[in-house]
Amino acid sequence: MKAKVLAIDGTKSKEISLPDIFNEDFRPDLIRRASLALRSGAYQAQGVDPDAGFRTSAAFFGRRKKVFRTTNNRGISRLPRVKLSGGGLGEVRRVPQSKGGRTAHPPKIDKILVEKINDKERKRAIRSAIAATINHELVIKRGHKIGHLKELPLVLEDKFNDLKKTKDVLEVLKKLQLEAELARGATVTIRAGRGTMRGRPYRRKRAGLIVTDKESGLFKALKNIPGFEIRVAKDLNADILAPGGDAGRLTIYTESSISQLEKMFR
Image 1 (tube, rainbow, N blue to C red):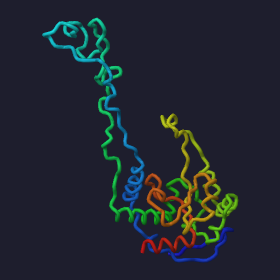
Image 2 (image 1 turned 180 degrees about the horizontal axis):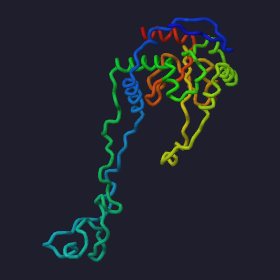
Image 3 (image 1 turned 135 degrees about the vertical axis):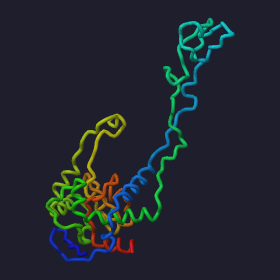
């Protein structure tokens, strides 16, 4: 399989042969599992205070042999009640159905949250996700605005690594006719639901991904382009290539990163 190498002005520079990794079978099941396994590693164990709901004088007074402070024959529920001065009974406490009572089935800190995946399956998921980046149908299905692009992947010459300013990177992306994708990445919507109260009020699109062979000034330049991400080829994983487990992310490779991928997945 051949791919065109584009200059930073958008013109064709030469052609290269793509490695066999781009012919990998599409395995959406493995890609989703690998993505969820990565995300589960960020989960935090949740728990409750062992004494929550029990900091009270409430006790059960329902024994028939004792008349003092009993709940029998009083026309009230026989549940733990707060002890009042003078031998009276207060409100129900402790039990889950009472005000200020304990939680019925609270989250346990020993619950296993991390989902594991076999190493061979993880590597195959990465290979499959890389191959999905050149599938025109999958990229469009994922929502990327590339209707005008006829050939994938987008491979740029290594001079792209030398760019250090955001305006220069934007100029290159516009010459690749990615204006619609840039606008898509800049779209911000308000999240529906309780997340707006919990520090995550906005939703942002995951736009294109740029893959290079080494870190350079390009990394800093990409920070000011919303939606776009940049990674070194050796740091790729299933969640970066297929956010949320949905394969087909629009990916721009540098020429040297293609060679690095070939060495990694021989």
